[in-house]
Length: 151
Image 1 (cartoon, rainbow, N blue to C red):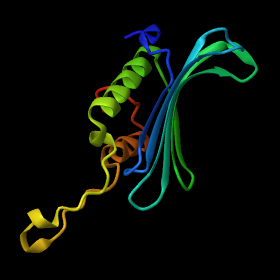
Image 2: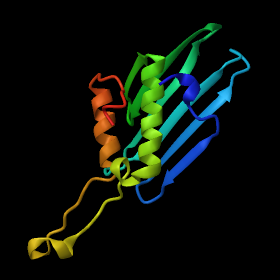
Image 3: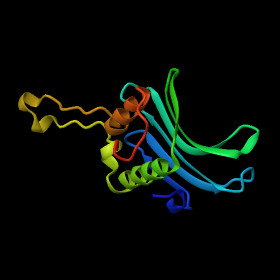
Image 4: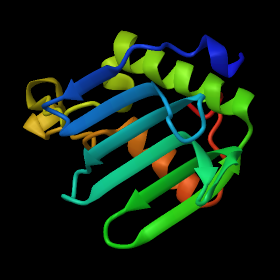
């Protein structure tokens, strides 16, 4: 998939019960004269830690002619992994991520669920909040590059 196939309209998807937000922008940059797509994800995990991921088209500081794609994963406090990815991989990943958020919202950003009535002896079955996104984020922290297949 090419970068030009990414949507031009801004998308904001909120998962209130999962404490997560996904923002996609594809604005025209005055510095580069090109569209600079950006996917930004922020969530609070089961333990109250903030996690953020951006996948965006950027330019080198002071050099708007050098454009590249960057994946930046962050987990508070201070865990950070930054890597460059190709434009086609970034576009595929953004398209897949938005598709999953819009069509299968609990796959990445489930709310904690208690199903005590379905468990023997009333024991709760608890899935960590935003479990799908947390697994994805942890893979990125371990050095994996984001791809549509990871999702």
